[in-house]
Image 1 (cartoon, rainbow, N blue to C red):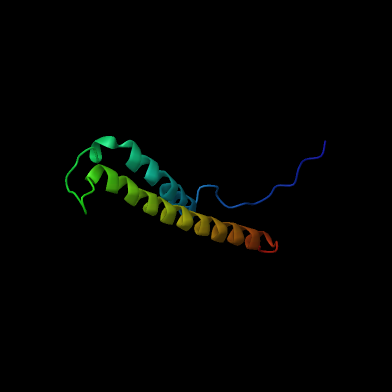
Image 2 (cartoon, one colour):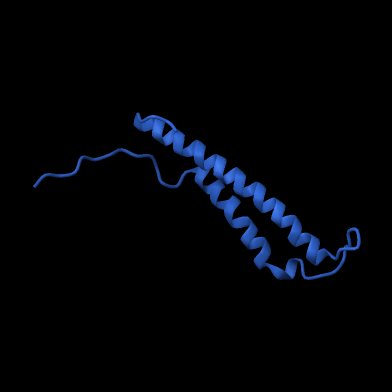
Length: 88
């Protein structure tokens, strides 16, 4: 029987991928921990904390997702270049 050639790839879990995972998990943790924001004070421009905190996380989530995407692209380009393939 023929054996498949061994491919030498880097580790699947890299520090960059851990940062990507943290960027994607942070909004979920922040929103699922309701006890941390289930209050009305402080009020900002007449909006209770409960509401503006959640709206702030919409913006933070967007930024974190964008950072995760850019890191993922850079990681994929680096892996592709290390294999000798063309980068996209």
